[in-house]
Length: 343
Image 1: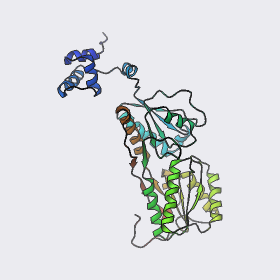
Image 2 (image 1 turned 180 degrees about the vertical axis):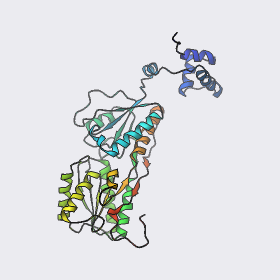
Image 3 (image 1 turned 180 degrees about the horizontal axis):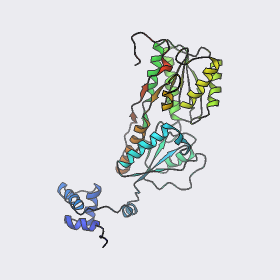
Image 4 (image 1 turned 60 degrees about the horizontal axis):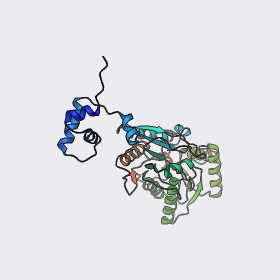
């Protein structure tokens, strides 16, 4: 015969408390003595009670699922960074028995309905993403993975320590004699791009060096377009001896441009990337890059968002920073200083 499911009423009867007290004890809410709460937990464990999540959701409005929004989520699965970020978010949700829902993401077409989730992670927020703005204005708990661009409503954010890592690469390059650094990265549509460019230009000003910058649309993976851009930069600024690219597609374009011009990264021009990938470690030469630990970033976004959901919107006032790590490779070994290692 089919065993009848244990109900909340059964647990309450076994613990000699009311049904509402049993519910509060099991959810970690309500005011009661520690002994009462423990009696309820012991009864639930003894009876092998499993809460009816559907009924709880109907009562509280919670579905124990968080959404993940990205500018072009489907396309981005080709990116090592995004796959790792999603994996980290899954680790974070699973640890708290939540589901992760990948939201539909056409940035130019508004949503018809707000998604049925308890909160949303917005990965890499972009200024002209209409759906991200809708989510931010919907009243849902929101955590962003990386910086918001100027003019976008904000929320608690989890970021990698880009500024420290970028300055580390610039200082290392200066130690080895560079005099004309350049940077290519996203425009003001990306908060991450704004941070990188601002950090680069501030460092150049502090060191009294000319700093050349060029803009690339966030998420642009067109290698040919980036190759043409690097050729134009080097034609206008032939003395450039350090090129920092924000992403791997820009690096691939830069390598093609440098081969065409007969310049060798690591020998007569240094090349570095603000995001690492397995490919950058096996190119010729291998490219120095910043590992921003996307899995840890996604995991921390999920942890923070679930904390906000379960504590009624409470969030840290300051941003949460995940350490970044620089992987030093052959593309930044020009003019090594005897006895000195990269910092």
